[in-house]
Length: 298
Image 1 (tube, rainbow, N blue to C red):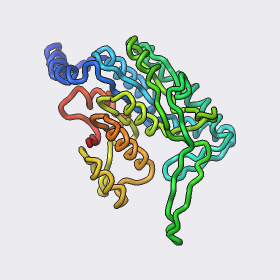
Image 2 (cartoon, rainbow, N blue to C red; image 1 turned 135 degrees about the horizontal axis):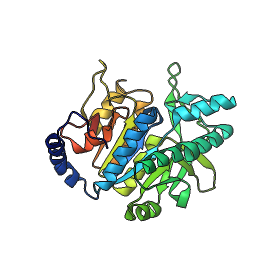
Image 3 (cartoon, rainbow, N blue to C red; image 1 turned 60 degrees about the horizontal axis):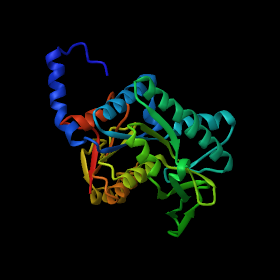
């Protein structure tokens, strides 16, 4: 990571000293980072993210990257003339769409992230949920209440899945060798059917199974906002549920919060939702006193 030119050597050294207690706190701890498609941005943003991941690994942490790729999928679907829609913040995935999802997520996006990390001196391995039967999925089910009839209806999201089981054998072997796993949320069910799993949900399942110290959800917003659009710096599970109930948390933020709650209940110490477009957001969160985004604790 390049040192800002306006820092003297003494100032740069002081920054490292201030970061030391935080590095010691996370030494040898698993940190799962969900890198959202909206947070990927341009090449400079991707390079900053790759620098962060490599620095975390070289500082003694065990980063695991789980990525999305919604914008990239949308562009490819448009190019191929395939229409898609969203329900409850999740992409409805038919047979044609799931093929595109696998091609984009497990293919181009995954290898692009691996390439950025490699160029910064890291050793990354790109995998998806199918590899080594890492994550077995089942068909996702969602229900909504019709506003007029008040009758509960089941949403059919097509080939959208949710994690059923996580086998950490492959991941633990990779981490033991000081490699950086980069994971795409494309999974298979027990019958071999491919499912598109929401990247936040996927990351939460991985973090829970590994007993991660932190789960960082990098997105394109500063964190959880109140009704006046101000950042809420800290929340509990109960507060999150109240904010969903009163409509403060809505749309695509709902599955993120559901992921936070799931991960916390599985033993993750804390989850942070933060803006991945802020340069070195992960380092600010983990290695400074101020932190970044909204931290959610049990």
